[in-house]
Structures are given as C-alpha cells and as structure tokens.
Length: 183
Image (cartoon, rainbow, N blue to C red; front, side, top):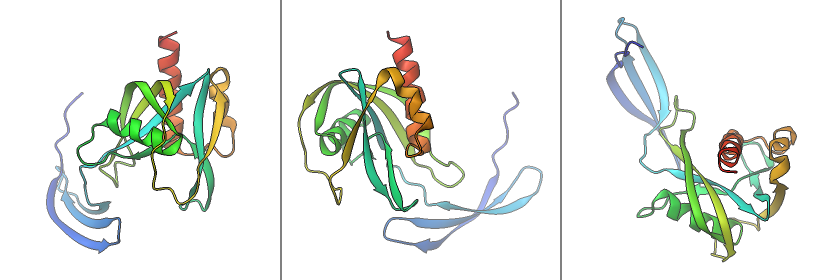
C-alpha cells in the first residue's frame, strides 16, 4: 500500500475551553492543494484503561450513570491512567475502586483509539484474572452496581439494551478472542 503524505498543518487555534476540554481549530493543506479546517480536542498524553474482570466463570460489569446519554448504562470498569502509573497499575487501582477486587493476573489485550478524528486519547483494554477482595476509595458520586454475567453467555451482552458503549463492545470482542485462544 502506498504511503499517504500527511497534510501540512497551516495553523492551530484554541477556540473553546471548559473545565475538562480544550477545543482547537486546525487548518490543513492536503497534498492535492485542498485546504480544510477541522476541530478537535487538544491532544493530551493521558491514556485510560478498561478492564474485563473475570471471577468464578463470570464477567463483572458495572452500571453507572452516563451524562452523555442521560441514562444508566452498563459496561466494564474503566478510568484514567494517573501520572506515574502504567496501564496495568491503573487497571488494578480502578478494579479496587469500582468493584472492590484487585487482580493477581492482568493482561493487556489492545490499545484502541477513541474517535480519532476528534481525540488523541487511547484506551488500554486489559483482562483481569485471579481476583481477590480489596477496596479502594473511588471518585464516583454514587455506589456502582455490579453485574455478574456468565462467560458462557458473554456474547449475549450484544443484545442487551443497556450494553451500548462502543469501548465496552470492543473489550467484549477482545476478551472473547483471548478466552477462545487460551482455553
């Protein structure tokens, strides 16, 4: 496959800011002379983790409020990687905060981009085995509800009306492939 020449960045302007985000306008010129302006979130080096925890032949999911859809959704535990942590350390901390378990075995399955047209963020997908009880204080505004889902029926999650987040769907497929390859 022929390598494409990246467009030239002509200008980047910061056009809006909130407590969490900064939006940039990026003026580009493509190799064919076309010029376009795109908007994106200001690139950041922070990454996040999503963990597929397994205990007693079950997946553990959580139900939490998602303000973007103004409803409760359920998916896998997740959170930002804090400064000084690697993905596996963050995964273990998030497990303890969100489901009250740590993991003796954490395996990175993939690193995914999330809406790469707008965000530079990456989500590290991790599978967690050999769980043990340990609770850390989290930052959630209300207790998270745990859902145990049988591994034997894991792909049935795709039909559940509250399992809609694309990152959780991706993690489900990655975990399914991992489990099939490691029987």
